[in-house]
Amino acid sequence: MTEQKKEKSRDFNQLLRDNGLKVTPHRLRVLDELTHKNAAVSQPDLEKTIGAEIDRVTLYRILSSFEDQGIVHKIFDLQGTATYAICNSDCRKDHHQDQHVHFICSVCNSVYCLDEVPFPYIPLPKNFTLHALALNAVGLCENCQKEE
Amino acid sequence: MTEQKKEKSRDFNQLLRDNGLKVTPHRLRVLDELTHKNAAVSQPDLEKTIGAEIDRVTLYRILSSFEDQGIVHKIFDLQGTATYAICNSDCRKDHHQDQHVHFICSVCNSVYCLDEVPFPYIPLPKNFTLHALALNAVGLCENCQKEE
DNA sequence: TTAAGTGCAAAATCTTTGCAAATGT
DNA sequence: ACATTTGCAAAGATTTTGCACTTAA
Image 1: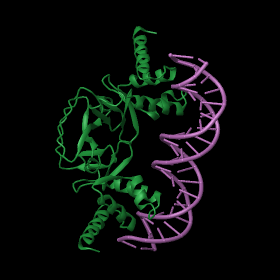
Image 2: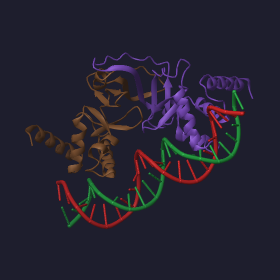
Image 3: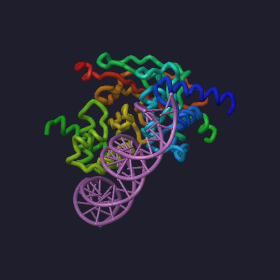
Image 4: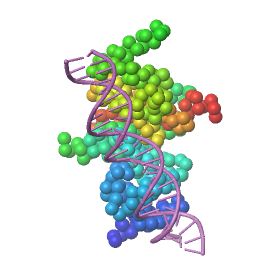
């Protein structure tokens, strides 16, 4: 195991413990998978990659526990399929800091979290009370651009 | 039938014909239902209201044909359930003008299309090509505000 | 008349639940 | 040791497909 990997899995151990979840190989595997790509990953995709190792039901339960604890947040792709991305550190159980722009590729359907893109101010009618904003940009991602 | 209703159904007849769809009582019923509320309606909601009159499979097919033809557009609510709203007139089959802010109520889960709210400009990294933007605001809608 | 739309039955997916066995702390 | 987590089987929910009957144009 490289230094980097050791570092990363130590972080994951801490992350799970901090959120009252036991450290299990399956949970580490899912966390690892979620950080591998720079895009959010859907349950079906996870099932394809790690479906042989982890039972489908367990995968559902792992993702759901992560979501409950605020370890991941859920973004829906263009087909309405849930995708999961690891929250950045300032997410709390009941206060997700997922106010960043998501980019969804219309070709490969990947969901990217664009943390660096500034989030706009939106003036809403006064009969609506705003709690959160989700901004999804749809288009061609870097990989699919090359192949056009 | 009131003048207003007559007017409305004439529009719907035209709308269906313009999009190469035959005018049937079921399709008119669905269109009527979609305009009744000022919020987007989900398939399950439609099924609750008109499920006795229309077979579930037919409802799926009607919504899917509407979507294909660009008569409605599809927005996903907080649970990832598809909701449908009638497109405004400048929608075309392959060019949806649904670049308006959607407001999703976290209590009643209603989806509103806020056509009047200005749409922001978002600067994206140059390795992403933008085709469309979807902006979903989540919070309390006018009805649920009253009941707090 | 005839192509499109509909209903019913059935299949295919997707997601959740219950419970006994295995595992982490 | 004990509460959690996991796998398997099964139930439930959602969506799609095939085919014969009906209807709009």
